[in-house]
Length: 112
Image (cartoon, rainbow, N blue to C red; front, side):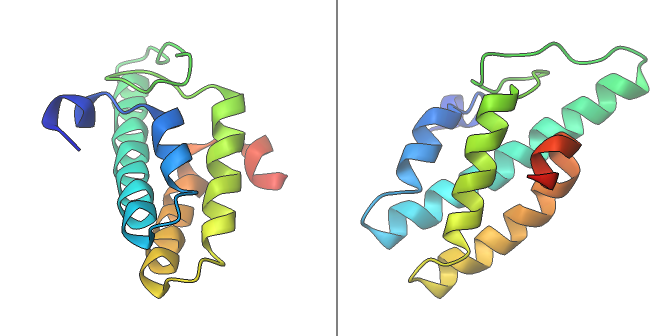
């Protein structure tokens, strides 16, 4: 993934790649998704620390954006499906991403 797009991830593209037939594509997609979620959580936390909630986005990610609930739901579904992936490496990153999801997405998404 190029440096420019890494700063502003397109969650739809990453989610599509999590279903790719090539395990390397799935691995990179879930790894990039995990890093994007970590950045999003860190930015949300820093915005809260400054006393202002981060603005919502249309699911495209960004510097101080919040992921919309539909995209959160799709991310949760993708991560859960990758827990049963045929590649152990993909499964490992999916578990790591699951731990990030639990602190990143809204509580309603986790309960579902």
